[in-house]
Length: 349
Image 1 (cartoon, rainbow, N blue to C red):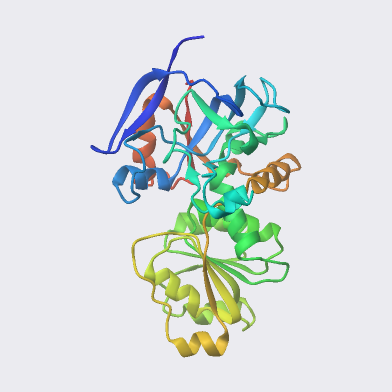
Image 2: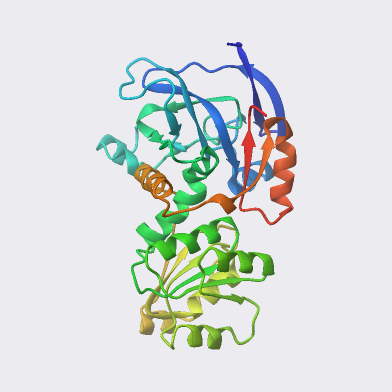
């Protein structure tokens, strides 16, 4: 095979995205090399480019939502073979924090993030720790598999782990883009009823209904609280998800909660929170919780859901662009061309 490969390289000092020929990486001890099939373009990738997220290293290959085939195995790797279809984990434990020293690597306090602290998968090949791999069942399309590492697993963690949604919960989702659309699907699988979506984009609202929402309301409706009360039979919302992460959506989500209800904040911005009066929180026992990321076993569970048809992400693949056109894909996500859920990169097209 060739000694070099095509890769996107982000240069932090100038915030430039460049396509470069770089050496094909070699797997070290405990690592595998993956021939990348597809890799998603995520809003966090855009945040690194814009400077909203600080750059941990001066130059890095971006892309952290990948699926591919093991191409080479490093020393000491067991239970994996060349040709296995896999999804790499998007993080590595630091091995230095107090939790890592206790062997609790999955809850590392200083997790190193793929495509931020080390090279990602907007490239023809990428390196992954063998312990963080998830096997892709033969029945699962590789485009949908690539979505699992973050685009779907982070909403899964928000619904199942932080929100602890269970059958009968009334669930609300603010922001019906990529994250919000997946929360709708996963909340339905968890047994939530009714599921209510909130947005101001009519196309996103219609899509949420197709994906399993029972009701969708414009978040700028002046009678919104009355509509939520009617949709829930007066009991209001048990678990709300803010997939936008701005002051107005969080305040609105809090206002719709039932006694003991909680808001799980998945979206992020630099804005300060505005949660309303203390007395409302205390008397009604409301909660606001932050969420980020997932556990590796979440990806495995989602892969099984795809295999058995419990989950269908066909509509989530909005566009596939060649790696050589990565700037086009980035622009389409920035400008929301076609109202995308996920745009994928194909390194071999």
